Length: 259
Image 1 (cartoon, one colour):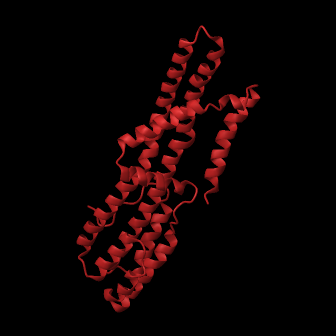
Image 2 (cartoon, helix red, strand yellow):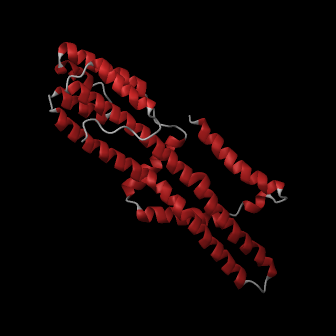
Image 3 (cartoon, one colour):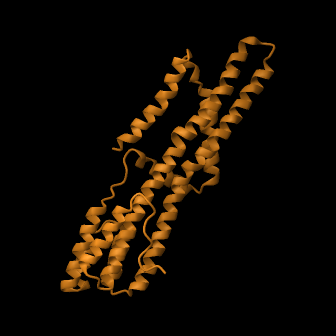
């Protein structure tokens, strides 16, 4: 459980509601189901219109990472690659074949299988980088739907405000209906801007951060496999992989073997 996400959401919403109360306003005045329906429905429709169904579905699944982040154990990965390198150095690459059935990660399993099959290091790098780039693009497209929601939401909020003002103008002769129209107008803007900056954009950025961490782990694995393929000393491989951890959360190192 990522507690900082819960705390951040609580602080953000609490600060806004607390400010409303301190200014003498009522929290109930910010509860406008009509405005919420306009903003959420309009934003959802816009995001669905721009996204293929597979991307939209992936983005919805990924939002769980905000509170239950994917397990990424870089140090365990280093230990695993180090074990492979020592074993291959003593007994040859074929000794690693039993490990392929134990791996759950398709990327790791494919890379290790290519290594066991005796693939040329340059060919191994090319094949795995295609997998790497494809995975990164798919994940980032999923995260992008939340970024897009953060872009659409304020505009839909303004649209809701205009609709509320139109309702006000249509009922100038009936003062009893003016309050509701004005409330929808201003609260729709609050919902649009608030959801964008308190929910949608932070979610998108956190997802991109986790994708970056996953890419570092896959880069580490690929670097280790290439080191084993060219016969590097296990200590050199381990030392090089340690460098990836030290560089987090900055930009991942250049891919192994890339010219």
